[in-house]
Every structure is written in structure tokens, then in C-alpha cells.
Length: 294
Image (cartoon, rainbow, N blue to C red; front, side):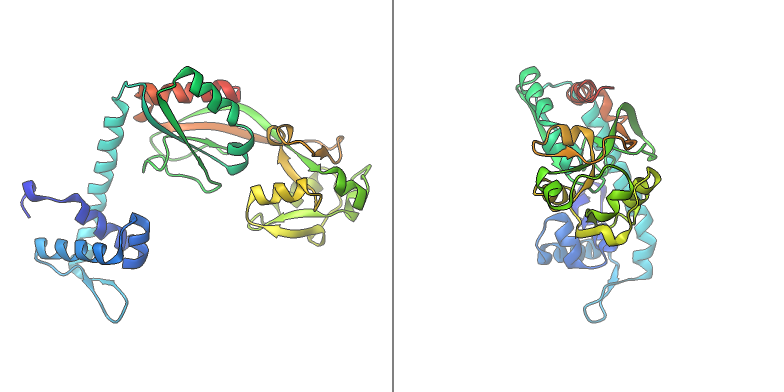
């Protein structure tokens, strides 16, 4: 394969297949049809003159030649990511797209005023808000800016600490009609707490450290979605710890136990150091920091 004929898409198809473990999973990851991805992998094998995968049955197994090429291909991918980041960082245009990621509840309840501000300050700039509880990879350009609740530890990122928020215990008036309004931590033992799949008891631990007398038997129903759980709270199905900024923007919820010490939640605004030289991303970053109280 001569340098002038090099097709990065073929290497990308190879690496996606290695990392995903199958053609079908890699095709979903890249947004391609499985036959298209299979043809790209076969084209790379033909161009290099080597067999990259053995295909016993439906499985894919890297050959020795494939294993030797993986690290080289991975280095090429990192170089391509760096090139894209550097090029984006040089852009001084105040139009185009900036992608911001935040947890769903923040996106729905805290960021609408910021989006209105962006329309006023930079009407030609399009902000795409990725509402996702899973962490997006800024180096891989899954997003340009992230709002996170933990300090990032990935190399190459720029982080700014914003004003911390707090989590407190909330419920709806209809919940109090069913279960009564607790006056202290001991009376919380008779209540119901919305459970979150994957929480591993962290919410209970925070509440019990603050004097609540609750156990796993108090948790039901369960969900894996913060937005669903918060809607359940609003409907009176149970209590939940929630960020103050979200609760303040949600009508129809009240503090369950005002005397309980709040749970401090850090807020970090994160971008990539290369991208932070882009005028449009710097504008969005700075206005977000202003909105979040940097």
C-alpha cells in the first residue's frame, strides 16, 4: 500500500473490529452496514497482503500478523485524533457547532437559560447538547466541552472548578399525603426512597451519615435513569437526593427534611487543551463558566 493510496477508513474499520470483538458490533459503533465493514477489512488485508483475522465459525480471531499491526494502527489513530484536535483549535470562526455534554437532569433543568444566552450572544453558533449520564470522551471528540461532577484525570484536558452545588432530599406533596412528613431521621425509616440501579448503596450511605435511619428495604421502585427517577419523585412515588439547582427548577417538589446537612457536589467544566484555543469553543466554555458560577 503506497502512502499516496493510503485509506485511513480501512485502518479505522480494522481497529473498530479489534476493539468491538465482532464485525456486527464494530459496524454499529461506526454507523456502517456490516457487509460494508467486512469489505473494508478485506480490502485492508488485500492491500497489505496479509491475513488479519482467522474466521473459525462466526468468531473473529486475530492472526499473528494482525496482532503485530494493532499497536501501529492504534498509534495512527491517536495521531489522527491529535491532528483533528489541533486543526479544530486553530479555528477562530464564530459559527459552526460546539458540542456540550452534561447529565440528563442538568441538560433538562439547569442549562436552558444558558442556551437562550448563547442564541443572544452568538446567533450563528449552534450548540448541540448531548444529554448523557455516561462520560463522553473529549479526546475522541465525542464532545467539545463537558460538565462533570468529578475532577478529570485524563491527560490533555483543561478543567475549571465551578461553584459547587448540593444534593438534598426531595419529595412531592402527594408523597407526604401517603407517608407523612418526617420530622427527623428516625421517622425517615417509614418512608420510601427511589432506588437507582448501579448506585451501590451510595445514596443510602450519604443519608445515614446525616442521621437518616434507612436501609435497602426502603428502596423501591428502581430505575437506571436519573430523569425517570426524578419524574417518579414528582409523581409522589418516593423520595430522592437531588441537586439543588435541578430541584429549584422543578415545580411541585419540596424538601423532605430541611434540617438535614446537604451533600456537597463538585462541578467541573472540562475541555481539551488543544480545543481551548478555538474562539467559538472558548466563548461557549467561558459563558458556561459564567452561568455555572466559576
